[in-house]
Image (cartoon, rainbow, N blue to C red):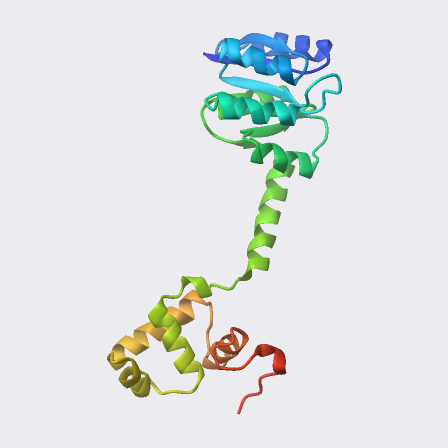
Length: 225
């Protein structure tokens, strides 16, 4: 049985949600609250599986603050945020504070039921447009942090990269690092794969940008010899 506390400052909304959810055999609405402080008290008293938490409650503690306090004290209670607006700032803030998901108040009833069951089971739930934005933000973050995979290279691979970029032949690199030529070739293959490079000029350009050639990439353009 999934026990639920409904938190919303509108009594009509609470009543409607209570009637809707009580119709499902695996749901039990055990309490209601009209603002954040009251929500905390209900959770402390009833220890529900899920709290449906309204974000905007002007006459008391808001949903974000209440979510933070509830999750710190009662980590086993899942909080599903109810919101009228798919506001990105509030959405990500709620997740940072421990909410298991967010759903729009105008979502179909079946979606709300699915979301409650999902978070009660320990999974996260985001409404579709929020999921899309989250993925877009992650992709942008990855792009800004670089498709630069230099941190994936081992110390030995970084040494080989620098020597290859400076024009040393495989045999010279092997002698310099006291390893076999076959090992040098293997390191080069791994480097090209990790950095998603295909040609030696690309590798040299990459090493130049990383400052591995002994001079800065800010000094001008690198020309092929």
